Image 1 (cartoon, rainbow over the protein chains, first blue to last red):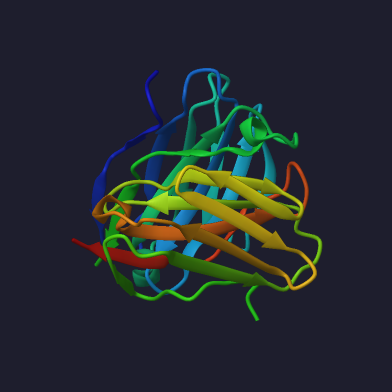
Image 2 (image 1 turned 30 degrees about the vertical axis):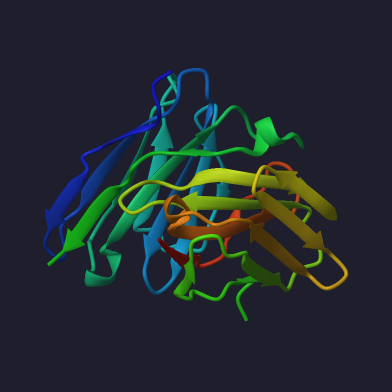
Length: 118
Length: 111
């Protein structure tokens, strides 16, 4: 079974530009979550999508947005990039949203996209 | 105060040692508790999952949840160099809500 894939793996952008990151979940998984990971703040939740609808949202400015397509693939966009947006962006997929079992709660992470803003 | 606190370490131990990793949290509403392991240049992977209080054992790993103290632990017995990684605790209030992570503890096991 193929894992979660993220493209591109590495990106270098300059301040003010915008960027789009892509995530393909494990086949059959319908929920996709996005996280930002930095040495200072750790892993911070951005948003979660299920059935093309945003179900949860973290405390990030509106410059961070996302969407999910009917095939469960997801993209996130960051507009007007700032130096502080340099981070590893991780995507995670899970079977569904809600449910109390381990299978329901387990998130499978991709390798991440390393974004550097100059 | 962050919702989930975790000492970043680093923690260095010799092979065969017992390792104890901990997280504290402030919100008593958390019900689902997890430990993820993240190797360098990889995404995190789920290691242990516990619902509510109690202990869960899986091989050399034991997860404990003490809801009265708002404290969770991960114990690694007979630690191996392959256990060298960053360990992240994670928790959520209820099914369907966002997963909140600790900052992670970096563990190094030397042979």
